[in-house]
Image 1 (cartoon, rainbow, N blue to C red):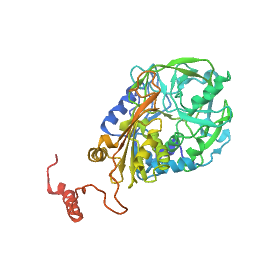
Image 2: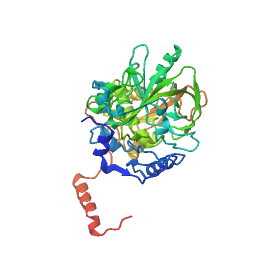
Image 3: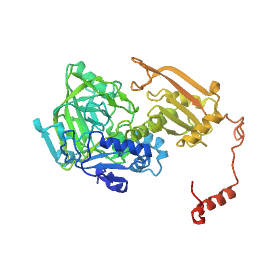
Image 4: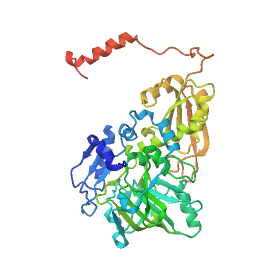
Length: 472
């Protein structure tokens, strides 16, 4: 059986919270995610009979917080340890597996086909997440377009504000491949064909976020991350020009007309700030298809739920970029606390200059703003360990690199208005190399206790509760 959203929910049923019925889609579900984030708790949330702004209930359940936990997301990839994703993701997404094309009558996502006035966006239980946002947004919609010159498709998660029953705004990030495809169609005076698919197994959601060259299809990368061929089906409106995942939950098909822009936003971005209102293309809806018992997937924008999967995919991209210039690279971590701007590199006995090569390669990636390189005795998933390395192994005048005028994210709220480049910093927090192979590094030894004493101390602590020691 092909893996999809349902198989994941069944496999991880112990991590799914079935919420009380009748929760509001206006702020209430997102407020729960904020509360859980603050407590470091990351269950999957499933809500039925949710209420719209008009008080009407939706028959389509909402699932959110699907990928808020790194542990759960790694388990979806078949990995026992969430700290081992960077090299794995780089290898699996680059290798890929060819997709499998199904006939329409075999595709679950086309069990229900709605056209004309029946293709009403009001059927979709989209959430209004934060104050000052203008209305309900699709936050987990994967926009799929194609390059009109080559026919090669591209997929990316991009927000859509449901403005009316048949029209939504769509914000493809200006540097994205979808925006490039859109500009090509509009440059010809033609509407851009597009399909937005929602809901799938987390491995597919991550595979379609692999950072690829242009033009390059995400379907092979998604299959590689999933570990099996991704099942596709021709869309109803665009046929084989735009394929969609056959095991998705909902697909919205339409056209982005040339020369038509609408105000979009403000909207809560991954930075944790509301992004400003901006002109955006619109999509006129031609068709909606879905499973007969569809589930709607929502990402908590700006929350851990949205950061984890893309940050893991970013770890894979950085691993690929840095490994080519720094063979000592062992691991990469893009922490949710740094949004998508920070990256930690772990190296094993880098030769002189190699840590700096690694830093420069990582800083060249558009999203990164601060990169730290450490030795392999430092756990890059521990903030305390990273702070210790920076505190005890860095002299700023010697170990800090500041580079101006590199490409950055236009969503970075620290950039002045109109800025197109960013200032970035790398920190070499590795120890000085040894004078000769096999020689000790010229630093004091780390404080340790004998192994047998550590074993006895562990046993003593394990028996603390039985001994009645007080807890503090």
